[in-house]
Length: 157
Image (cartoon, rainbow, N blue to C red; front, side):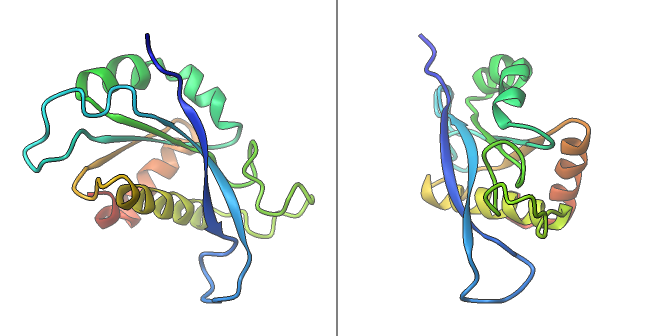
């Protein structure tokens, strides 16, 4: 039987764009599904399988996970991929300012930095620094995916 995904949390700085060592942090939610990871032959560089990342956008991340059958039912099993679905700040349960009604740190740049930080940290944590990241998204999430590839290429290779 297929194991369900698990919701997890990643500590992020409130503001990636200012160098302030004492700045507050918050918890970003992401979904991880390793059901198929490493179930295929290792890649030429020893990687267990690619990281398939969904750039969450305007809504709770579970909705994107549930509606994305292509990644869950086709790509992950055929590639032996690890599924990671990142929830965008200020959406779903990823609330940097605790539902205060303030959106001081809501920007595309901050969301991209969250995703880059999450992916870089997960690659280290999972001993997967040699695994490529393939990013997906639709609508605003598709824009985030494109910008993530353009601005953070080295982190995703």
